[in-house]
Image 1 (cartoon, rainbow, N blue to C red):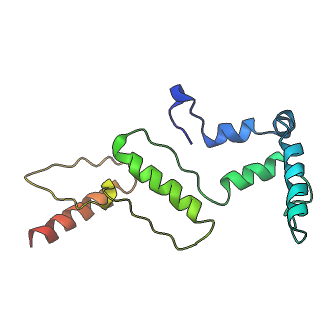
Image 2 (image 1 turned 180 degrees about the horizontal axis):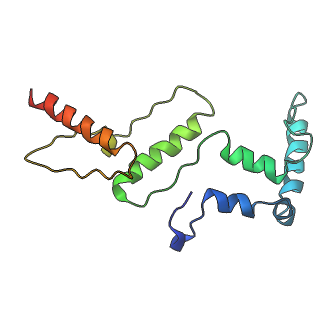
Image 3 (image 1 turned 120 degrees about the horizontal axis):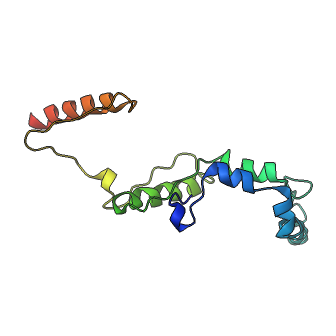
Length: 145
């Protein structure tokens, strides 16, 4: 999902509000679905559709959001590799449950080192931040050994 509203961004609740049965009919998606099912049945006589008819808006929303978590596109260059990896992993999860990809040079796969004195402010409103700060201290102590 695109998070930048100035670039046409749209979030999950807005998609869910916009996606209606009327919209599916307006763009001919229900008719197109029925054409595809007919074509697939002609190509493979053993084909059985999961839906006896074209899915309604609720079923489409379920297919979009209930099975595989959506990925929010990040325009921050540092995070784009992570976003691309997450999109690829989501696609692969349809075929293979155990999928762990690594993109060469991805920022999250790099070793982190700390040099010099540093101070960390941990907001009480950022759940888990204190645990992360403690983990960073532990990593730093291990690296010093």
